[in-house]
Length: 582
Image (cartoon, rainbow, N blue to C red; front, side, top):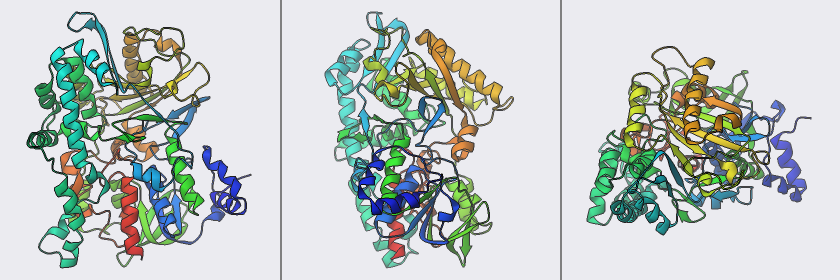
């Protein structure tokens, strides 16, 4: 029997106690007969931002329909059982930048969201002992300030003292600019002379947020400028002298980006990854029980509980445009669904260049859209293992016993910043890195629901791998050759890892694009470079979530504040659309 979301929603209205199902992960297959011919709003794509959009709109009294092309909701925040018995956070893999207000507004804990806070946060094992006495084997960083000082002092007493000051500097800058994440960016076309007085007036709240974001301390202003413009290596070299610490910190400046720590502007990505908050703890990261798909499921539970309809296996082929207004969508099977507003959780490229009828946009807007960079260096490898990895640097005390470093992000090939830069240079030459930067997380170290007893899920976020290879292509042979390279490196840090592997799922940039609809395989819906942020995200003329076509909005990570900041683009787009729908 096929069960639809509408059937579930109607059943809940009759039997309120049935809401307990929202505490559980579930997958629905929607029958086409449930589709209506018209809605107030259609959301294209059931990624987490699209679902947030739907939840806010539905809670505001609009009749909303979400159309997802895949068989499962969540977009990149999805849980899939690729290997029997093992639940992979197949794309996105850790939680931090889901804004607290969204968790509160949508009552996500009520709807099933449960998070395991991580501590420590970062673990960098060394192949060869080093440090001041030549015996240091690893660097472990977490929320315990005294322990951080002790760990760093293995490599440099000066760095241990400076790290406290460095963290305080970052905290002050984050506190100053964080409000920008939760507000619309200044829309430059309305600030310019050609705008009407009403349009200029509408920008006052955004201008106020921008002015208030300037750090108050003189030294912080200088540091903030550097973070926005300088290479990460320049910034870290001013603060620290020990390479294991600098390389560990540098990983946050390049994660998911086709840049090197030596690339100007990479400092912003470093800042972007320390803005998170969980359970009221700044900078905290965590694993979601049941995998990242549980985040999407909780949001969907909220949306459907208020009456929204979510349809899987329902790909959209085009957006209907009549008299320069978005009037609905056409499904791949030819079905037309009308709506007063269409909000797209797809990338800017898919939304504006693939789904719109040709010639719908002004030529200058289309030209700017075609120039957006979607370069990605990421290959994600999801691994099922029958034993917990045992690192030479910190051997397991007992077989199967989870140690503190197993809960952290484990950085491999990160003893020196030059190793990261060399991997970047390999990708620029059109080859995958033979010594890739590897971030390993083991969410089953805290979450017992995603792997069989004694077994574990290892998620590998690796770079650098170019979208197009200079010699050959990403076929099964090449995928496995790269994965074997990654596994050989892990084996050198944790002997026995390869023998413990039960199964693996290899996702190169083209695979990420094909499966998740992420143009270029870019996890952020477009590079997080300075020319594609804030008033220029995705482009200057579309930075207010709107489009020259009335009734069409961008609600995905291609809009401000960009990828990683979960839910904000969806919430902001919903609020903009609600004003127009009144």
